[in-house]
View 1 (tube, helix red, strand yellow):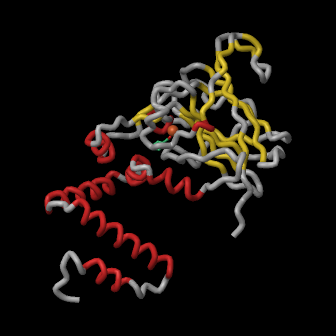
View 2 (spheres, protein in one colour):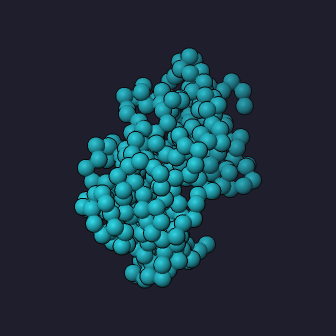
View 3 (tube, protein in one colour):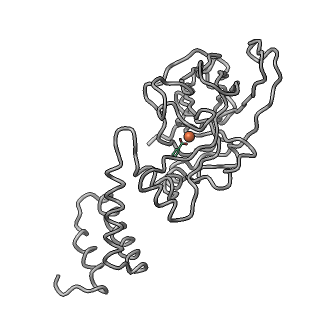
Length: 287
Ligand code: BEZ
Ligand code: FE
């Protein structure tokens, strides 16, 4: 193991890790070495470029806190999160497609009864959200939990500029798998871009925006938990989502409704939007 040069070093490193006892750790370690060495051979970085790369990753780590995960943003903006999502959700036909989880889910979200408004006191256009939760054979999933969260009408999540939790809640589907609740219309927004990931996007000539969407996480006994969003037709960023999360099957449109009786019997004094989406969960994969 002496006098290694650029033609011999990769094999020597692979040899050194070939006796890794755990097979998965060995496979992962070997793949990292093969791909990293191939990357360096392709790029042929100068010493200064290599130091810049190390400094960039250091700053990504330093930006992380309990309310900011810059490494996940890096994974999201390089398309890695959606690739991992795709590999892990090869769904049966008819099941609702998945997309990125994102950093704005909050464990302590309120649990509200069906029909409640999860955005009381928040300015914006009223939005009535409703739909069903079924399995792939069309059987309604009574009691499924429906978590939803989204931005306000200026593109900010509650955790970005409020003290209280709004525009997010957990609901429980009724005995026919139906759910419905009130909120306010969200807006497209930039992902947090005041850190190294934002610098990277600027250097790549990319914008930091995600198209308007409502997040859902839906869980039911015996089914794979579904993490997805519903997007809105016509949004200017549908074809350039900074985290590559848009799927055609997840795009829908609002129905614009005039003042009057809403579907849940609420007498609306102002115009409101109806967002309807039916979710299909796939069976839980058993090991
Ligand atoms: C989100 O949709 O909340 C999100 C997803 C990925 C990165 C940033 C935000
Ligand atoms: Fe989001």
